[in-house]
Image 1 (cartoon, helix red, strand yellow):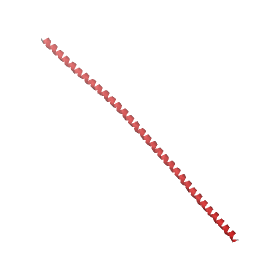
Image 2 (cartoon, helix red, strand yellow):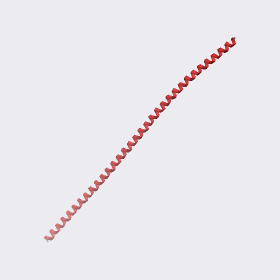
Image 3 (cartoon, helix red, strand yellow):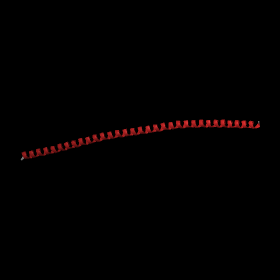
Length: 119
């Protein structure tokens, strides 16, 4: 009977040890799974952040290019306007000179006609 009791205690302690071992094993598996998830999540987050930074950089590049083109266009328009103004003022000067020459020619003609009439 003592042998049976001792065998029963041995069996119980062995079962208890097995349960404890099984729980530890399960816990370790859960910890490993959690670590794998964390690593995966961390890698995904890193990829996402890298992609986000790249997108932002591309967007900033597009904005810089757009701004550069706008400034370039503004400079070209300014130059075009300046040339147009120069041409307009040159045309204005030429027109004034032509008007003066025409008036002088007409005055000369009228003078000559008066001289002819007087004779």
